[in-house]
Length: 308
Ligand code: PMT
Image 1: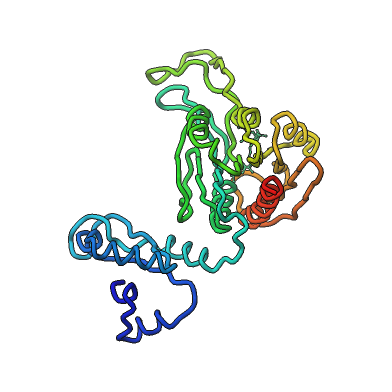
Image 2 (image 1 turned 90 degrees about the vertical axis):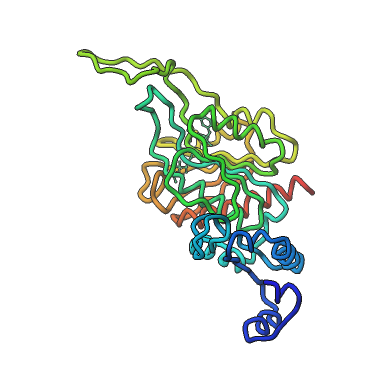
């Protein structure tokens, strides 16, 4: 790092590095004190200024026996960063994009909750591809088992209300919001403090409405913001989705049909139609990442229309 920051090419590696014109990524791995040393930090800053990307090290137990920041980034993060560096479309460069993903969970008591089958895959794929297209991405997600895409700001939430709070804290500064999360429309009216005991008879659970986050965003949408909802339908798919588009004041809505093979919850593929006021784009069955990339291109175009 010190050598390439200062143009010293005295071995094969540094010679090749300085002579190459391609994008350059540096993944530091060293002792914490060495990493935090102002000389190292200044050299890293210098590398950034020269256009190199630094893949931040992780914290943990280091080879020297110390514990702290300095562990080489994970293989997944290195792979993500390299893939991103090779990606040439920067249609979302300069934009702040907020993506929501996954289910919400609504507590009944300390043990049980109501939720749905969303895995988060669709929203995570959108966050990953938006980041790859150059956006500054915030991902607000309900409980899931997925790896957070490299470079994305991650905000984990649980209930619909906590998702709403996390979104409202940043929504006004976002250029584009894409809501792929499956938010619970209802929550138990009361949350028992202790585990509910089973009785002999049936249990009737009283539910109350959760806030409709997307409708709230639509009602308070800044002029140039692009607001994209998702719709999960099982009948009259396009008609119902278009109703949501209008009712919630959206710029577009992505509809998927849960009854279709390979679409919707948990699978790695999806088949969607992206509905705008004046246009419908029906995409074939494809991977969620490919759907996400197509969507990124369409929201970028919409945003640029509003900017013009
Ligand atoms: O996560 P995966 O397993 O990959 O599955 C992906 C998916 C099927 C969850 C995703 O593709 C999808 O369809 N997400 C939207 C699911 C949904 O809640 O649809 P809806 O028709 O009930 O809601 C319409 C829109 O309003 C959605 O953008 C939703 O985020 C939003 N909403 C709904 C209720 C509520 N209280 N607040 C909301 O903001």
